[in-house]
Image 1 (cartoon, rainbow, N blue to C red):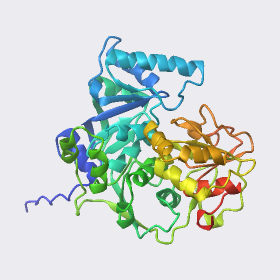
Image 2 (image 1 turned 90 degrees about the horizontal axis):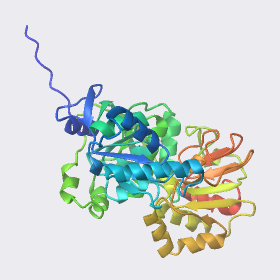
Image 3 (image 1 turned 180 degrees about the horizontal axis):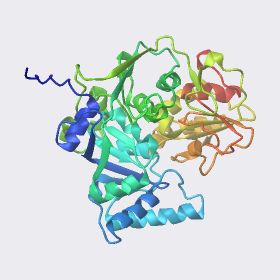
Image 4 (image 1 turned 120 degrees about the vertical axis):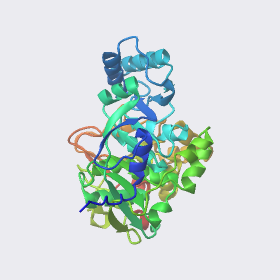
Length: 429
């Protein structure tokens, strides 16, 4: 008897993006050589990518498409050491030589600047030499972090090998309570799934609560997809996406062209969360998936509050924290460091009077950069100190001494805790 070919199921969002990038139907589990739509490097990972490019292509070679490469300085800016200054000199020279756009004058954190400057489009494949490149999935792009050697290959060819990932649909239902945020949602998901629970999966964030999230809220969630091992964390583009992008992208037609959505019959595992009764969440030291509801966190004195990062450094985050501070000063013995994610976000805060209010409360308001998130140029924790942070990682030594302790939280929790001096439930503030 002749075998009849079984009809193929529909495609997921990621499969459709890879089909577009390879100009053929791509399915999960297949290895494909995909065309890259945009590539990003920053001041920490960029020098090694440049070195690799010269080794692959030769010292006089030109990158495949300078218009699709973006360089940013955000981790050690302004330069905090002679080595950092030397790296900046090398990167500026490469940008001039290759005619690459370089945001080196304090524009902010790469993952905030890329979309706000119009370099992220739905349906794009975007790679960056930073693990939190998955942030751009908030706009319907397949965005993922790669190593500097892989980026060197992208510089030379404009292509990269991928295994098309399977998709996990994270269904976020219900309505968030007051003072509970998208950061609490993604921390709860990571706590439930585990740090490796979504290894090499494309996580699609869906459901009524996900659809109600603003762009800043979606960026927070997509940013932390890597913390559960995901290859990408994606929201389907909708009117919220389009409104944001139309204000920033010159080629409006390109926005529409890139919109793809998952087919109803696509093959994807589903997991469900109802957030209606969700509490604020805390990631306890020293792992992001070591998550407890705040009601189960013992009274914990803190030495420092860090409000900012590519996870929660937007105007909405900073304003929420300030609202929870209620005009009260930062607690005695607590250092509060506030770092907006970009120059644009800084200017929003400045015009709205937030900078003055934070300063009057006793906080330090810094220029847009990565700040204390990766234990960089300032805000290091000493041995035995406890830091409460709105960033995305709390590994041993991440923000200073390996004998320090980092707790991750939402901006609401950060604001409420800054004025009490201990980890505080923002619902009770």
